[in-house]
Length: 450
Image (cartoon, rainbow, N blue to C red; front, side):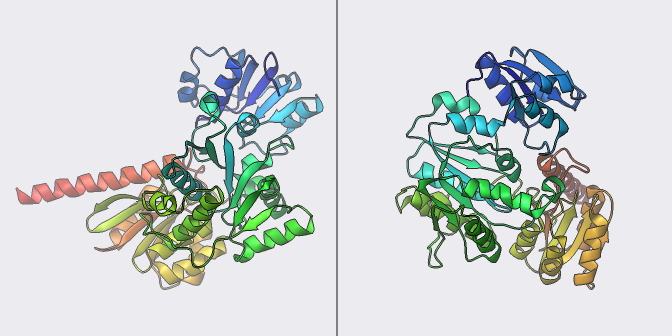
């Protein structure tokens, strides 16, 4: 699709760079760009500053205007927009092409592509694959849902490069039938998630199908089909006649190096990454070197500091009960959990047994606090538990209740946007609380020495 000279409406500038990158790329490609966002200029100040000097034809903030969609030839949709959005339907009925930033990239990407999706573990697995490819001497681009847009890098890419893309269910749901096929598709896990956006499990599963069924005929799908939920997903795919590619799974005897990221769940991620790299033709020696040097991602069981005999970990990217349960298991017997936020509709009951088995205590905050507290009381009635509105107060309670040798983990099991802009903002706020505690502890220690 040639965008030069076409009227293009970008729906959702956002605050994380995707809307900025696609708006700039479209303008440079000669499109007549209109940006539409319900947020106001103050909220979008950082994004707007990045567009200074870019020839944007129209900028409509504070609300959407139907005419911007009725008159558009192309609409680029922010993945957070729900699929039944009325304005998107208006554009579609008027004959507009509906696309997204990631689809525009994939249509033009000359590199060999690896797509990674799943309910949990997709960010870490994608980053691990990229680390191995780079260790093997491949020029590698890591992008998609995991970070910045790769559209600006298209001009630097070649057919000898590799692009590793974390693809969320939102991004996949917005993919049209035009998007080109992947060489390798990786499914890390499957469990109910994002019901607040997808509405049903069937719609959520269908978004995963879009990755699995869009692998090249000479490509491969990597998935742990010994996992019951993943296996059931493939069974449904088979019933619909959509699996025509080779599917491989990690072997139990897969030899992995000592990892610098903790937890059994990360060893499972590493096994998938190792197999994907092997399918990409990486040298066997590059796999342990790449995995052994991988230091983890921000906001994913990231050690913030050791203060007053306690360790504090930021796991703000853990927005499902399964990922929070994995964090609990990693520090079993000495962990105090901070969880809460906006309930996405996953099975929160899964957190109950993990709390009973692994937690020393837990504090719940945000919109889902009462629901989480009720589940915790049912499964772990003898465990110290607390529900309170703000994270700051929950953090203070955990500090008061915990002791030397304990671990305090922010692993929310929920989305962030009841109290925070996004998971990054939530993780940064947690880190700020830890650093303030450290400074206060140092000050108190210095005073006592005087």
